[in-house]
Length: 409
Image (cartoon, rainbow, N blue to C red):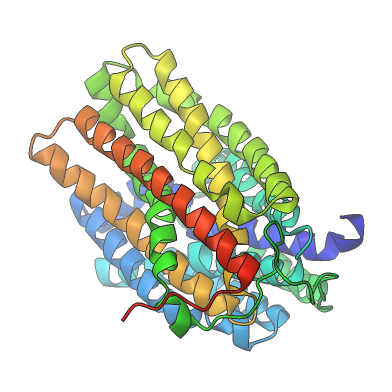
């Protein structure tokens, strides 16, 4: 991997810089934003949810840039646009400006930064795609471990708007030039002409997005892919309520996050090795099973230690899926139209993560116990795991004999 350091570094930096548009980062300023703009929790949540959903729709089209344009230019463009969103936070005065600011942050932060990284790595690497995705995906837990404490200190010292101005400076003066340098040279995968076998990682042909949306197996795969963003976001968003109903202090949940992050990092490398050793198709059924078990542990647990156990299981799914899902699309559908295909899948994942807090919150308001919701989500993930076992076998068979698409008519 040493000879590929420049491309891996670029992928890592892209995922790290996506933090400026991630929920956990923006949430660090939620109190100040609501206070200065006079918004209630519900009003801020509505603006945030609508902006996130809008960014998911836009990503379907903007994501095609990863196919059509040079990666160097796209990365710098995304960096500039993310800086524009960060600047918007320094001047926001009302809900309308806040909506457009969050829209830009979510589209070019959580959306395009991540999308460009995983699309480029998926296209550049074949034989060692899993390990490469695990290395570059390390940018996510790194930012989650480093930035919150720094932000809290800087907000206390300089004010929240000044912190966003610092983000603008970092993006324009540091990240953009580094992207320009690192991505100035493209990479051709050593196994570019490989043909898929039962354990291979190169697709036998390149699918268009039009073909993918008519492929039945794509929708069956998405049944599993969409579960972690929906379940994970919902549980994390309503963690305070969950801890209250269990009679635990919120510090029990917060204290489990470092363990969650550590497990997610380790499991991403396990997934990377497994994907390279076998294939993403074969590893796919294992990705959501740990989260299903974790939801059951949370639902039936009666002591604080069960929260830590659940977070360990959630960490396994987070690491497994981040690497496996990113490797699956180029492996199954090829790399020529990878940007358009990944944009479609990622847009659906953003929709799931945006809908989850609202759906689970509405059920809470209607008196549905959160433990019952956890059991239903766990049952869904168990059923989806069984479906993914069948899908995995079908995908392997199709890769081996190069079947035509199973078209929906």
